[in-house]
Length: 332
Image (cartoon, rainbow, N blue to C red; front, side):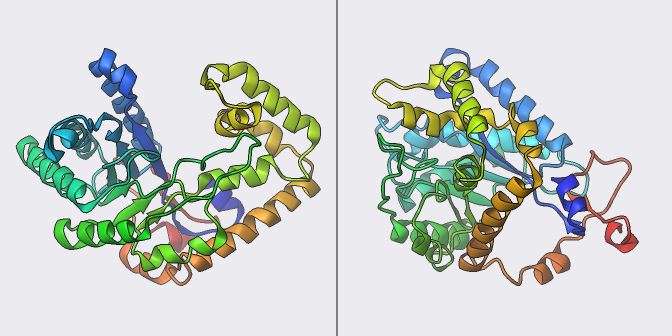
C-alpha cells in the first residue's frame, strides 16, 4: 500500500485496517489460550506493520442459548475488552489505535439496540476492571447481510433484505449513549447500487466492500482464461476442506477463492499492461461511484486538519505516513 501511494504521487496519511481479528469458536472451545495467543500474535504483527485500525471480532462467542442478554454477550465483551487492553499496552507512543468490536456475527441473527446496550455496559465494566482506556470507537452489527453475499447454486448472488432502520438506530445509540463513531456495516459489497446512498443517511461510520473488488478482478473479461482456470484449480486443490456439503462447485469457488490472492499475487501483477489497464479502469469507476454515494468526497480538508502524524525514530515502524520524494513538507 505504501508503494502504491508513492507510485501515485500521494502525500499524507494512509489508514490501514486489520479486519476480523476473529476468534474461531471451535478452536476456542477446545483450547481458548492457544486461540487467543494466535490472535495476540496477529495483533502484534499488525501494529508493527502500521495497522492502526484493528477490528476485534469475538462475536463468534456470543451464546444465544443463555437466559439473558448480558450472559449471551459476556464472553464476547470480556474477550473484546482484554484484547483492547492488549492493543493499548502495545500501541506506539502518540498513536491511539482505532479499535472496533462486534455484537453479532455477520450472516446470523440481526442485531438490536438491546444487544448493543448489554455489550457496551459489560465491555465498559470490564475495561474499568482491567484499568485501561480508551475503549472501542465503532461497533460492527448484523443487519441482514453476509460476507461476500449469499451465493446461489449457479454462483450468482441472492438479493438481500437489509434492515436499514436497525442500522440507523444502532448507529445513533452507539454515538449518543456510548460516545462511539457509530455502527459498521459488513458484507455490503454485493448489495445493489441504489443501496449505497442510504448508508450515510443511516449514519453508518464504516462500510466493508472487499468482495466486489475481488470479483471485478477475478471475473473480468480481460483476465486470461488460463489464469482463471489455474486459480480455480488451485482453490479446489488447496482449499477443499472448505467445500461445504451441498454447495455446488460455483458456490465453493466463489466463497474460497480469496485464499488464492496471496499465492497468485505476482501473476496478477505481471499481467500485460493493457489487461491491467482494463481491469484498473473498471475498479476506478467502481471506487468513484462508491466515494460519491458514501459521501467520501471533500474529506481531505478535515483529514489534514485533525490527523497530524509525526515520524519518531523511537516509535514502531510506520506505514501510516507517506511522502513523495519531491515533497519534503509532507513528512513533517
